[in-house]
Amino acid sequence: MRPAPALIAGVLLLAVLGLAVAFGWVPRAALVFGATVLAALALVDGARLLHLPTPRVQRECAPVLPLGVRREVLLTLHPADARALRVDVHDGHPPEFLVSGLPRRLQLAAHASTRFDYAITAHERGRYVFSAVQLRLHAPLRLWTQRRLVAAEQALKVYPDFAPLTRLALIGADQASRVLGAHLRRRRGDGTEFHQLREYREGDSLRQIDWKASQRARKLVSRDYREERNQQVMLLLDTGRRMLARDGALSHFDHVLNASLLLAWIALRQGDAVGLCAHGGEARFVKPARGGAALDGMLGAVYDLQPQPVATDYPAAATELARRQPRRSLVVLITNVRDEDVEDLLIAVRQLRRRHVVIVASLREKALDAARDALPTDFDGALLAGAVALYLDDRRNAHDALRAHGASVLDVDSDALPAALVERYLAIKREGIL
Image (cartoon, rainbow, N blue to C red; front, side):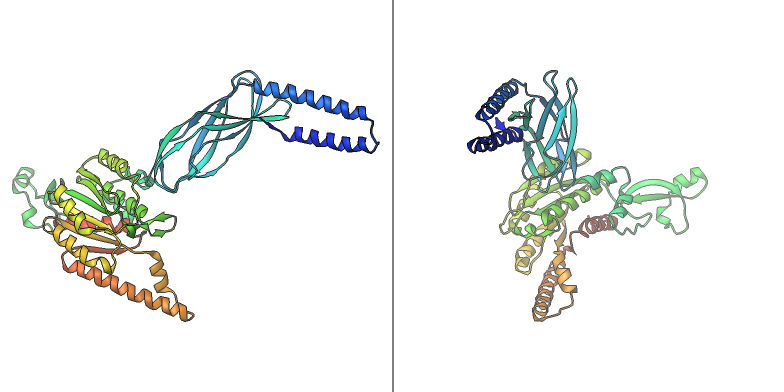
């Protein structure tokens, strides 16, 4: 229990009264009477506070939260008896969260539940736990307060931001690709898998005509093809030090996860199986699978995965992937290519190219583009512009070396990564390379 401001003010008033008694301005009996009344009120109020039952508290929060997205948490307080109660509430939210709307002072009515919500935003993925709800009860006369803890432990997980997936869930894969910014050049009739019969159109090749169907229909009927399904896509994610860089509020690895999930969703909608292999820091492997459950399994496997300040061993990652994924696949290696890594990357690409089709997505820091485009105004600015130009030139040379060994290379920043991955994946599907 702690004295409330009203009790502290009463004690201060008694001190002033005692000073007045010392100077003879007020009779001593007034001080004795005031002290007696205040002590009696404090004892009665304290005893009543100690006998107040603790309200029950219920928390409503989604078990899974998206990274960087504001979400509401609802608290409901149920009074334990028929007395009205004044209470301060502070929830035991994870300290890493950004919170608004707490603490809250409430007046609980008798026989009525009181509800309020507050907002949380998670800025790091992983598993978190809500601890007990902290209550501060006010005594009926407001002379004391007492801290109570209400057990309300609750675990929750922070996943990569899956809001874009929910927005795309109700539209087709092609339309979703256009929403992401991928530039599709679909060529009707191309592909390796039969899709449907349709009426002949000017420009169709003779080999597309189904002569038996045309004879039955007494008009020309063409076969329509689409990209082959039942293929496999493996996401090979770098979890080493290259992914610790940040663009905006998110790390490069968070941007990579978001783009990978979008590519996985598109590939699953195309009928392909999608798997994941993380390498560099902590290793994870998700076997290729199809259907909506595959994306849920991938989210559950990587939601708490974080990059580590260690060098990535690209040849070891390629060896591990080749061992665990013997079937020919489209391997999407997402990293940040530096010139000092190119020899190891070339070894890994050559090894993967023996069986797989390889895309290397090289994530570029936005700060490089800003420094390249800035007009130098002093000597330090000129030095920076020259250093950035040399660095980007080395980066281009590394990318050219990877292309010379058969890899498809993307050099993009975090904003362009999702559309670039989807566009290159669909282009490979259209051309029948896989």
